[in-house]
Length: 108
Image 1 (tube, rainbow, N blue to C red):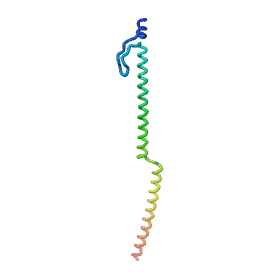
Image 2: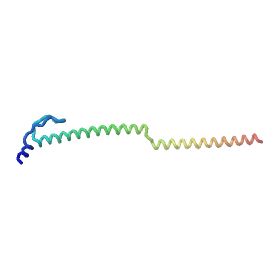
Image 3: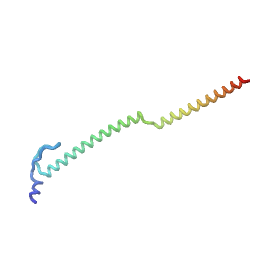
């Protein structure tokens, strides 16, 4: 039992791996270094993700403002088109009345 406890507290040689350099340290100290390195890598990745997400959001907003539908603008445009259609219908009605009057005058 003491031999197992000594494995955790006695210095061991560890080869370089990943971002960790070769060292001679206790198993628990080396495990703490592994956890610290993983936490640093996770923090770096989270920061990079946050920057990329911010860039993506800015690009998405820019694209949306250029190509997206603005409800107020579309409503105003639809109202304008409706008024133009109504005016064109009135003009056609007047022209139809004038044509009918011309035909009636020609028949008499």
